[in-house]
Image (tube, rainbow, N blue to C red):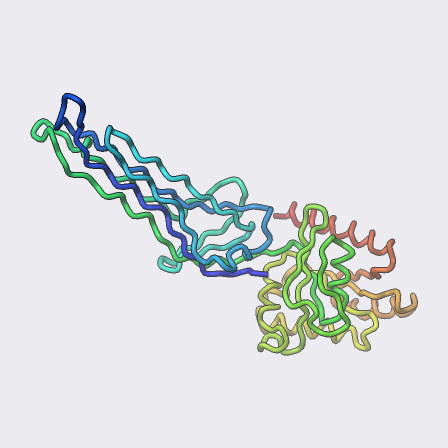
Length: 325
């Protein structure tokens, strides 16, 4: 997953104006007829639901619009270059590295101009006057704007699945959505967020972290940075863990050390792998989290009824969240 990148954009240059004098069968040296050059293409950004990250810029760190065509004789104007509209995931923050101006991509209907194309140069026909009937001067086309930008994806999903390694997040995402994350019984099977869709809503499997992540251990800061980009957190805890409450507190402490505002995100506790224990254990572990004052959910990917209940709950959670916004 690519969620931040430096990008150079270059709008097209304007075409050169033409310096031409009309010549015909009976006119060897007529008046000026050099046409204007066409304007260069401008570059716009627009939000789109079709993209979830910035990976399309992985190997292309520079985007250039076309130049306008040069003017020609016989008052032929150069063709204007087409403007370029670049689609970005909603929630992308764009920082102009020179000016420091920050723009947030928040909707998918309004293109935002970022680099204006150069104006086409005037041909010599534009310089004709009562005192100069045969001008030969013309203009070069204007330069298109160049911008150095930093693109950062601020929101990768409405719901983020978090938890220690092997807490069942990847398997859960696979069942909830049609995503295909790597699943294994060893730490850090998931090395970057995987996003799946539950109907029209994205859910992200966030890579697991370990104690000390706020100081760079495990997947470290990258994990915590991804957490910032979700709206609702589903905290997955393996119910077979010998100390499930400690597992919960480890991650909460890493939140506090990295960015205390993460503690304020809407969070639900999800006890996973309930097929491996009996009902008494489920009730006992559920009670351990009473003091957190968070809603505690239980599920097993092998229990279709529990998964359907979880899907229904997630849809309701996301609906409530969107209404609040």
